[in-house]
Image (cartoon, rainbow, N blue to C red; front, side):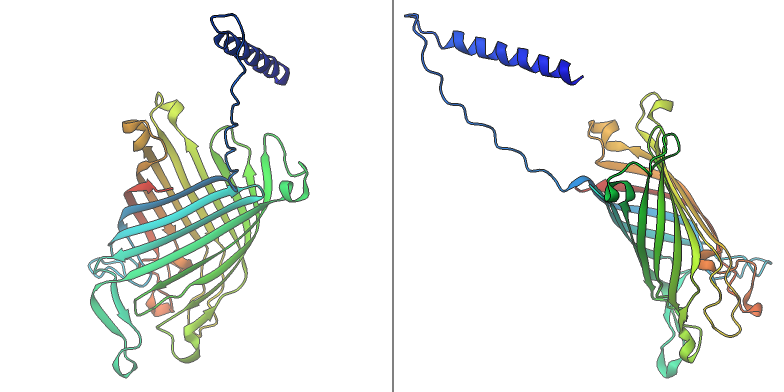
Amino acid sequence: MFARGLMVGLALSLAAFGQGSAADLAADGYKRPLAPVEAAPAKPVSFFLFSDTQVSYRYSFPAAEPGVPNNNTANPLDGRDIPKHILNISHADAWEYGTNFFSLDILKSGSQDPAGTANGPGGQAVVYDFGATEAYGLYRGSLSLNKLIGTTAFTYPGLVKDVSLSFGFDANTKNTVFGPEKRDVVGGLVFSVDVPVGFLNVAVHGYKEWNRNGFAVGPFRSVEFDWVPEFEIVYSFPLDGLFGGFPLKLAGFNNIVLPKGNGGIPGTAPTNVEFLSRTNLVLDVGKLVWDQPGRLDAFVGFQYWRNKFGVDKDIGFAQGGAGPGAEEKSFLAGVAVHIF
């Protein structure tokens, strides 16, 4: 391939030189000197191999929240249906040695999930008549072991493209009586599965969480959970070939956090296995309408969250739990704009 390209390039160069020489011959048959040609300035090499920043809006219904029961059903463990408007900004990039991903959700609940505070007058809890607002951010980074060591020892054709060090954190806050202030760190390995199209990454992490429980008294409001294993699966598969070139893809993730204890709060039920799954069907509207791919997306999806934040969905208030609302089955619809 290299030899063929070299010969083609040489032939084109010679042809160009011949055309230029003929044009420089004057009518008197004497060849005029060639004018000097300035070289085109070299384009700067980007640090990032890939970079994408997007802003999106999605509507989620019916969402749910642990400890928010539906008082209109006979089952005391049923959660209340909560509509949510969610604004997100996210950034993903790849560079020579790894990747970075950052995401920030601003989630506005309907009044079914009311705002409040545990620090009202006289230290009493106060519940407001409008919906709560939550901010949830996360970061994930990776460093390729193949690139760091300068080897291909972590590539297994047909199975794994690469193995990378993986690390990151989550943080949230929400203006409810419970007043969560989740802080967690993760660290481990991520395996880039060798798939024919798209990507599939599987991460195995150690997970450590700190949080806040506004219902607890005294020193127990600050909560520290046990170190536990955590697993993350992230994927994106183009579907163009299945629909005659229609610009669709299937994208999503699955998270599993094993039971992390009860945070040391007396009388509080232990946590259970937390499972979160979200799958989106994404349409590249920019490519479909304006032939400008990667500019504007529309998507629909489904999210299933069992034992949300580790809260056991089958343990009610009487047993020291907050099971009502700890299982979420929510439909999603939204749009995303890729800004740079």
